[in-house]
Length: 389
Ligand SMILES: O=C(O)CCC(=O)C(=O)O
Ligand SMILES: [Fe+2]
Image 1 (cartoon, rainbow, N blue to C red):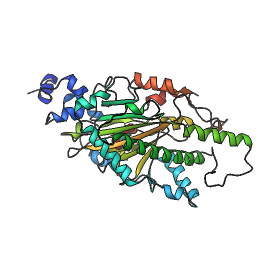
Image 2 (image 1 turned 135 degrees about the horizontal axis):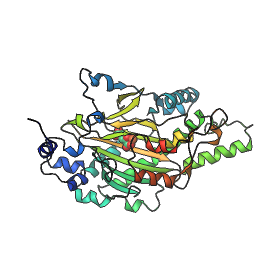
Image 3 (image 1 turned 180 degrees about the vertical axis):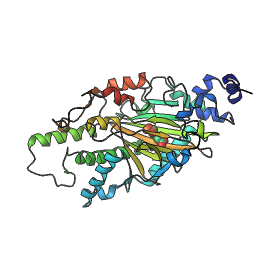
Image 4 (image 1 turned 90 degrees about the vertical axis):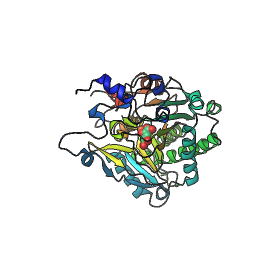
């Protein structure tokens, strides 16, 4: 017998209402569902594994990829030139790399995963204090990608916390679970310092600053050059930081939905901490490939703002999250960009006759308005900023 859409809907989610979905996927799962409700079922061509007759897409799309590894410790010493070379290649060819020996104590990383888990385990009433329809709220608990706009929801709840600038925001951070604020605060300070060091190295690979941290800055640099370098570095030091904690509960039918749809991140760099469950896939040479987490390391990726700043030399890369049927997964993304009152634009030093300016200037405020007004999927923000030449 032919099944109508109505039959399917009533079979899949008999008792759940729109209000339940808005409460988040953890809440939906706590209702004891045996199937993925229709609200989360992606059209066939957007599912993580395409069911194309005769083609085993598991083989062709889910290849494991070893990302380039950047040994942060070596970046600080005499091997810096070789590590910079690998970093440049990683930025050009992958847009993603893994950072090991980063110096952030492992207990800080463990505590961060653990307080995130404890936060998501709180009763809905406690978490709902931080729910807001406004994408620009500095503290925001929510579900899916943009729950006000998404037709199909993705299998993810999140907590977003503005960590820099912090001045007025800290008192609004959740005070529960115990130790939440101090753990997130020390984690955000540590990741921000790591980000600044990585950005200095990336600026060096772009030929925009010389290595003064190791005391080898050339004394014959012109004053103008020195000033440019100092200004650029200061902008990164004064930059913004947003921490996003993601929770992907175990899913009864993981082939039908995604934890996060394909998207690029907005900032300069994202530093991603994950627990030991796989989930992240990146688009590499037109295929979706799975990233194998290295315990205690960070996956770092280039965001849209670095693509603009580098005038397209380094590109942000689409990535997505698949879920599994056995266990939940936690990840913590730290997104870094310039100060909130700054302009995002290609560095003038990377524009010349051979390399015309490829992107429009955008102030951060317009950018935030843009992402709250549309579905920030794929790379549509970046597409809107491209200049036609
Ligand atoms: O959970 C992950 O592995 C990725 C999360 C992510 O892409 C994001 O928060 O932007
Ligand atoms: Fe992302």
